[in-house]
Image (cartoon, rainbow, N blue to C red; front, side, top):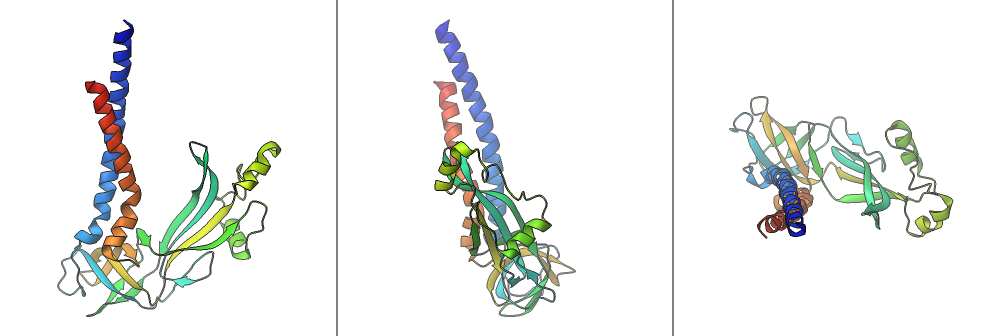
Length: 251
């Protein structure tokens, strides 16, 4: 009876692992496939002759925007932007301190892309911005943020001014301070006028304008790796879980 019970529990757990692993595998593979569009899209240097709604890739220099964005932390003029607010917490099994994203957003404005053959109008509807990450400020829980960050946090109610990690109980506060837990990091990825970029998107307005899906300051292959690396980790973990679940079912 004990052997039978042990076998049924093992089988149930193996089946559970298989189901969860398949879900994670499917989600991760889907995102990796979407990211691979950066290298799958044909490379062109002009929209002339491109089909309507065609997925294409262009490389060129960002020219001026009529109404540029202003990055919220550094006040830098840019045409595409991704920014993050991260907080150092005990994140991995509540044991290891790590920076956890508490807020992030992407924004863009229309700009012109100068390729070797033409100047291509690019719309603002950017889904992914990939650029060099700049840490604008690192603010401890007892420090006063720069004025630009104070203004940003006042204008964004969804970002709490403080969290439990910044104001823990007195008994563990000294340990948290020693580990820099509660420290916030403010980062930006900015695409600025004059940058060499890769833009992947679909042609619109009868092939005269590009609606971007990805704007990146990296090569196509480096962009794919940057976009897919988290999902690649998910694929590896899911594959290990799948093999373990299969072993438990067959053992």
